[in-house]
Image (cartoon, rainbow, N blue to C red; front, side, top):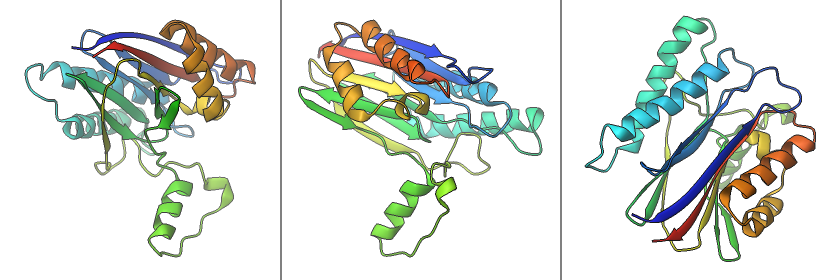
Length: 239
């Protein structure tokens, strides 16, 4: 098992009345991630909580075998959908979900929505996930030769979330770990306020995970904090 250090922080921000972000930080199970209740729908906090709780239960239920991350996400989708029928039968509820599970020397990511995971290796800083937004889907479809239009006001709208009526497509990413790797999971309350190059610098310069996530979340909040800001940082000390 790799030697890891991790820390998490969530801040309500300066505008919202409720924190609808949730995070996963379980160093014993090597499970990390974030969830963000979908704006514009009721029950965002409940949706995010249900999502991370379902993931934790799913991973803990398969300690001897490789967890089926797609099955775990689809189960979370059904659980959130069922909860939505109680909380908001007319509109439903929803959440993003981006989490990573480490076993051996490999990080396995599962991703739905527009929360993100970044990786820093040496001087290379990479966004490991793609936002599931109207703008990104249009870009991908245009690359395939399709003619796609969308209204500018809808470009950040989600095309996939946890709690939707049909099982969402789940992006799976695998990455071999190396000593010195650093990873950041965060919600869009961070990424809309702090540019990727700034995140890279803060992650690279921090002496430990707690210092890194504190600097990152505080910067997002100090720039106005229009949304909840949440993140988890992992330092890989050895593999």
